[in-house]
Amino acid sequence: MAIRQLSLNNFRNLISTTVDLNANLNIITGLNGSGKTSFLEALHIICQGRSFKTHSINHCIQHKKNSFLLFSLFDDYKAGISRNNKTSIIRIDNKTIHKVSLLAKKTPVRIINSSSFDLIIGTPVHKREYIDWCLFHVEHNYQSLWSDHKHSLKQRNALLKTRNNLSELYYWDKKISQLGMSIFNFRKKYIKSLQLVLDQEFPETIQHLNISLVYKPGWNVELSLLENLNSSRNKDIKNGFTQCGIHRDNIDILSYGRHAQTVLSRGEIKKLTIILIISQVYLLQKVNDREIMILIDDIDSELDEGSVKYLLNKLNSKKIQLFITNIESKEYLCQSHEEYKMFHVEHGMIKAVKHK
Ligand SMILES: Nc1ncnc2c1ncn2[C@@H]1O[C@H](COP(=O)(O)OP(=O)(O)O)[C@@H](O)[C@H]1O
Ligand SMILES: [Mg+2]
Image (tube, rainbow, N blue to C red; front, side, top):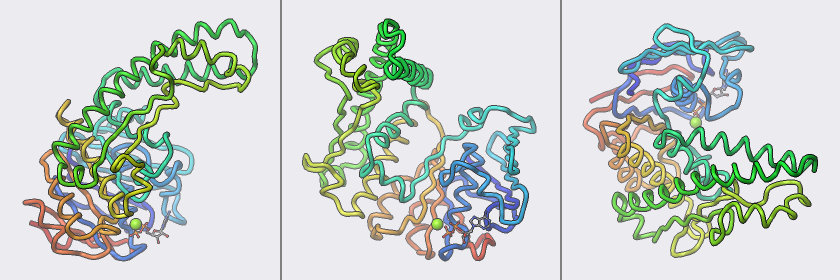
């Protein structure tokens, strides 16, 4: 759901204010340290209940203040978060809620910043997070499969570490292989669909850079997962942890058959990262027609004008509410969308400067 208005109080360096937002495109400009990223962070917190910058949203309380307050009007609900040093209070439509997940489900958000490059240059953990994000939103039971699998793996690893009650391993092996197979099938299907979206929606870039996604399961798929666990049992006991399974899955992102991070330029890595994330959003919207908020911090850095225009055009959709930040105000940032609103931030003061 699009956010129409955001009120900020004692949040980071931002001067308390209420801003009206555009449902399609919002551009935030300002010098280093003016408060652009903080503004995106506030949006992320009011949608997801958590920051993309810090594990503890206490850090967002303005220096020398005791608490912050965010309040927002969305198309069809109102949300508020207040945080003091000890607790958060989250309210949706004037009712206090006790589970952040209730807020997080309302409006999915994707942040794209310099950490997003981890999708290409990072570890398998980042690759799995990437696949899982969409599956959480697309497949209703994926979240519970995933949590059950995580729990079962923890139990198995605890047995392996203590070497007590090793006979219980059989129980957890069966459970892990059942849950793991379902997760494997979802991931396999989803990576294929993603490659299709990439080829169809971004043919210019994907062909030019010859990009392919290859699923690398963390176990030998010629055997069943249960057989894998059986045959690695002795080694697992020796090492004290489970060495094969979907928790070791990886996705290779290749350019001309080589790892993209070893081939592509920084700019190409950034462009491909954004394309991979937009593809995911397209896929999510194809399946369940949801509106999504995308935040892109410092869009211009490392991208040339042509690439920024290309990406903004791909992000022009009624179902995407886009927030981009940039140091300078540039004409081409406003050209992709029929409507937009531009803000300028100076020393924490957010001012609307133009709109169409
Ligand atoms: N809790 C806080 N209270 C007050 N100021 C803060 C707080 N946290 C960060 N800042 C300051 O806010 C300023 C804006 O940061 P940021 O939003 O990252 O700037 P930008 O993205 O525009 O470069 C920085 O100068 C930073 O030192
Ligand atoms: Mg910034």
